[in-house]
Image (cartoon, rainbow over all chains, first blue to last red; front, side, top):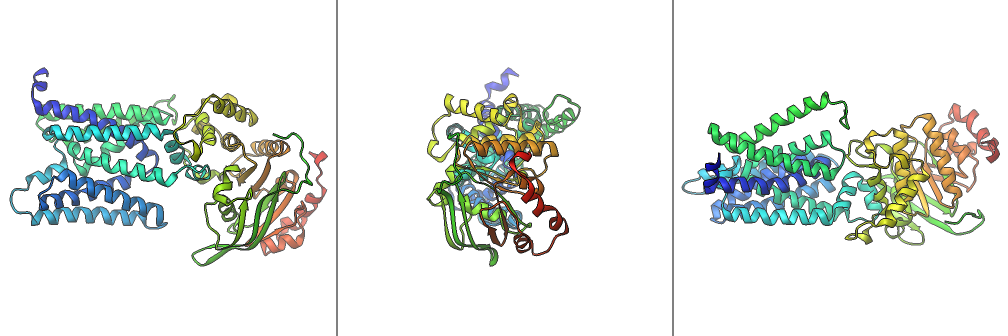
Length: 272
Length: 263
């Protein structure tokens, strides 16, 4: 066990787990409570278009992913705010188009492309120091923004109309939130891959909201749970020689099922 | 808060002139002229789809009218709405949201002007005081989702009161609330109105409404409002477009017969 930590890639992987869990627990809670799971999935998959294009033009894929996921965030945020109907259709279409763009650009790129797969399925063991620094910056940004706007975010997540009547900057807060989702998606892409981001983003918060009755507490528990899932999944995958991203997600999924069963038989739980 | 209040005072809080509104070419409100006087307790009735919620949205500055003029406290709705304590319709939000009663009422202390400021002890005192008003102080640390429909509605009223409103605006406050809670809520609104807060309430609850409100308006695309408590058969027919049996022999008499002492 201890010799694991002597590997640089393992230390980086565990560190990435910690950094991702912080943002994931906080933003995941807002995503679940504001019912933005589908939008987050859309943003994650559209980001693949950016990864493919970045490969083609020979720039850093993370940069491509950031640009695309922010664009997708704004577009989908706009669609959800403006269009009254068929928003799920539009988001679903953008989701698929983003993936398709990524695949076509990958086709057009000559040479070795195995690395593209790591963005789909994650490669927590390949996290570099530069990735860690980027994650730290995103974490600080997310934590700073959520602390600064906590009461307003809570209010507009709970009752948007009332918040508007109080002249809270509801649209600005929505923009802030969707931007944070875009950034968190990019950092999670390294850990579990964009296909499985929605699970790691939502499962911890979903478990948290089964047992807790306050948004702050759910954010805290979600962070701890993400950390347990990422590092636990990582260790399991290491010992059984499995794909780390998928192992993390299965671990989280198993825990969610267990939590649902536990919650059913728990008489003192708030929603029981 | 003023303890006494003269109905004859001429200050109007909300003024609406020749207002038209609609969505996608469909007319929802037509030539509305409506003035809310300070101290009034208005019950607004009308059929579903008659434009009641649309009118509330316009007053709250959430919807822009097609034509006409509206002022709230002499300002544009977006600026004047800070003086409105709004109690939304029950079904409008997520009843599963994890939030405490305290945090719900604290929302009433938030405003666009206080973005980066923490709420202070004065705010906390106001939150507790308003919960006292609605008799929910004992539940301050409970989760909203543990409460009954009537209790929640009183929490939302406390939240609206926490904004220190000049006008309290309620959209169907007694929907999905049992009979006993209903009476409690109406009694509460009566007390609030006596404290000098003007009330505009949308309701379906015709029989109860008539014994609590001061004036009644009927809205069915057009507004029928005469600053009086009587509903004439004429108003009713105009508002509902059909002579309803129940209304024909129930309501006008009751509206006329009930007096303050009767309660």
